[in-house]
Length: 377
Image (tube, rainbow, N blue to C red; front, side, top):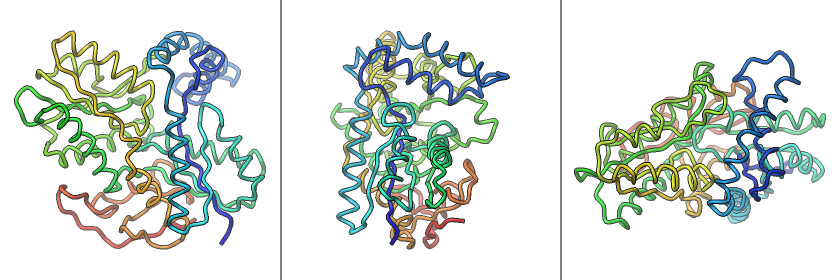
């Protein structure tokens, strides 16, 4: 068996709320998404990215101060360590690296280390529940770019993009909602109580260019909603949008949802996130809570289940067919990704829902064909 490693890929956030950390972080993000605006040269794109970063940094630094610093990287590193331990338990000789798109250790540096360590097969695992252009696809593009920059021609590189259909993942997200409702003494079916899903927004331009992110958000909310006894008419969905560039984003905005919701109590679930970070701890727990309470709404936020041990099982389940070359023992079916249409990129989203993954307990019954192991094209 070739020396194989999994590289977990995350957004990353600065560990310290200081300008020398926050501005470079933001500049990388804005540059990565510079195609959202017209610019004739790379120099113009970089200058615009610096301008946006300098403008956004003070507000983001305040958010980090308010939440006591971002826990995202520590939680992501814990996932990587625990995934490595799970591979040992499954007798899979695979090393796990943790890398970030926008903070250290950056993807390029970790890929360089993997090469120095003698890795022969590298598997990219974006730890984003719902596939998007600047997250799942962008993270795998970063790995490929790093490999190309090194001239590392003898490595086998594969990756997975969309994986939110994993039945255990759906279950653990539903359980997080159930636990919050139970602890608060609520009933989601009671008059005046409303479940609100909050998803990270994305620029509409990416959707126009073929991103299926909004479709996946709708599907995920529908399936998790079913598990907690809610149909689409029984819950709300809003997006956490960022208007730094003045471009059009996904709608409705979560602020508009809270301003218009007909309820006395809202239970808000951050469906796009698998780590607590500024978007959950600041945007939801501080800003959105304040807006809700100004309306007289009781506000309850579902914690991100980052420490649920079942999540490591989910990640290992997703990777095992890549590592062994065997069919998924769960009957998960992988297909060539449509968002990143490369031969070495697979996902659970490219097949019809009833074929890609078994239905979670409590959801509508759907046919599940036999497993299909991922393989390089």
